Length: 280
Ligand SMILES: O=C(O)c1ccccc1NCC(=O)[C@H](O)[C@H](O)COP(=O)(O)O
Image 1 (cartoon, helix red, strand yellow):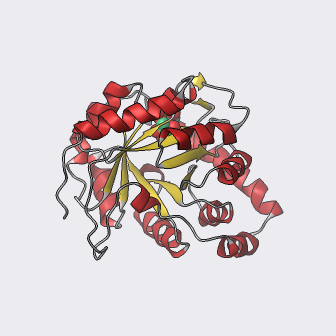
Image 2: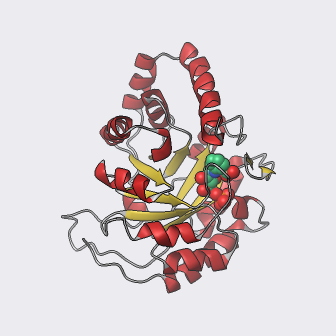
């Protein structure tokens, strides 16, 4: 069984336990009643056709992640107060905060997500391994603005269905790809925020060269996110120079004594390295 299959098997079991407490209709009602979602696409520098006078800028955005542990590295940080970490991320200039809610391999939870939601006004990514519509309703019910759809974990039909549901609920999706074929599948379903994750899901190794190989296939009107492997400002600059609009950073921030400064330097130096992008 691959790492991804193993993670998803656990996610499905945990999901059934939550569904036994709160059924599909109930979670859908809570999602419908939640306050409106924030505009994560705009927060990441995206510009929609018809936005009056809106221009793509060359600011590098940072999606800062609350991540306690991982399959590749084991324990990273205790994070007793995710709300406090989130405030530091906001203060440093993060554009979006990602909260891992997968419990078994990442040590996250919806409780972490709720604590962060209560602490900051930034758009939030509910970072989970989405395999059922239930999780998308659940994300919205908890105040998420963005959900993760991993192409490798979904059929084309599921991708299209989950993206449509996400948007019906007023959110956007970070659609994550690892290969050329997965980028093409993300584009085909109309993804507007496309992540290139440079961590190989089979070996868990990070190959930053994957980003440069794949980013060129992404249409100019999409937001391009470089995911994983930012260990310092050189990596942020490297991804920005190759066309990233945003970087998603976990490990480097949770182990840093001053994540505010780290984020500020990623934004400042990454933005200076980022080439202007023509609109589609
Ligand atoms: O982080 C892992 O080991 C991992 C293993 C298997 C599937 C997903 C995994 N990580 C999820 C992520 O996408 C990262 O948390 C995120 O990109 C941040 O990465 P990093 O900055 O390298 O911590």
